[in-house]
Amino acid sequence: MDFGDRFAYSTAPPVSNGAKETQSDGKETQESKETAEDQAAQGLAEVSHVGAGAARLRSRLSPSMSRLSPYPRPITSPLARFRLHIRHSPIHRLGVFADARIPARKYVIEYGGRLIRARNVYRELRKPGRPKRILMARLNRNWTIDAISGGSGAEYVNHSCHPNLYMRKTARHIYLISRRRIRRGEELTLDYKLRPRWPRLKCRCGEAKCRGFMNLP
Image (tube, rainbow, N blue to C red):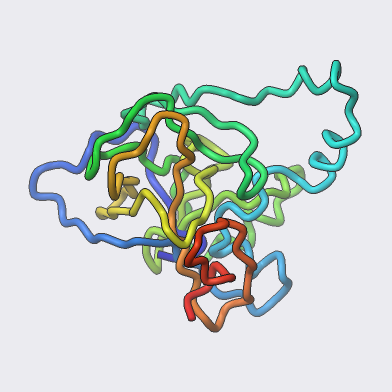
């Protein structure tokens, strides 16, 4: 996919019989010839879950005030098939974690949000009052899912060079499927597989065979 390659409608059932499926191990990003924000927008679906300003503010909070943090927060979306929650991640800001063991090759959660035309992505990002974080996924060359509205929580899944999830796409949906058994308490991850020609983004997954960047070699 592209770093804006996670979409879905609202409450979709699992892959229906006869639905044409494609499988991908990563995320795709659309190119941007304008600003760095634009480049991130098209594909860097999750690079900024929370604004840097909010992160700095949290670091200055006293212990008593930090208890007011809304995280960990359970994912209650009907698009999730297992018990999951969002909390602070050692990889990058916020991440998604399993609250129960997840068997291999199971539909875990769908990437939810509002379908928008790919050509309208930049216009959406520049709308007055829109949050600065970029939570988008590209379904195909024509459609993108904007998780700012109607997100399922899947938009907070972080990148890893050795992920435990992969993506399966149909005409209107993206499903996150478990590659292997996932332990309770384990963070859910995907390989974003950014194209080599896109701006290089450092990887923080910490895996032994980490590529060093989210981009493919």
